[in-house]
Image 1 (cartoon, rainbow, N blue to C red):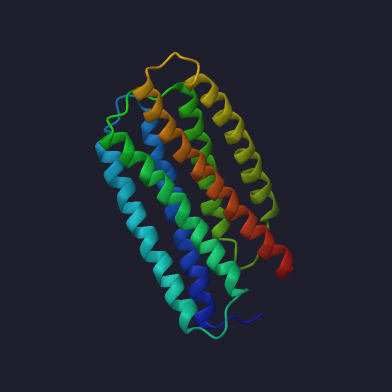
Image 2 (cartoon, rainbow, N blue to C red):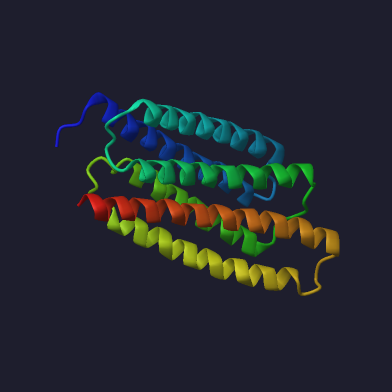
Length: 203
């Protein structure tokens, strides 16, 4: 299959969006260090969020002026939007940690962060393979597995937060961050589902 420069532009931008997602996961992982500067993490994540928005807008502009796309337009919208949602949720979480002066993260939230870091890395690598649609099945299987594990961690975390161990305000703050981490995990699964759908339809 011969690709036009315009078709290649979509792959380049989606690959760039994937790299940005992976970078966001690395930034988030800095929170695993109890002595990390949360304000600096939030600033770095905000930069990732702005970069992601810029990439998404470029993809949408390209869609609006292109007659030929590498695969169905609705899938490009789905994929670009889901990639953007991942970074948005993580940026909102890091910002909330600062503005709400959230206390120390509980160990299960560190588990959430580790799972997000792994899933964002897998996603970044997968976006670079979209053009060939080769060797992608292991990616969506792994991200789905990680999301299932994240769901289990989230349910255990909610049980812990509602156990009465925390004061009401502290519990509500931690619950908000946990919910945003869960949103990011869900968005990563949506990316994987989009890639799987594209691979199956285009194969």
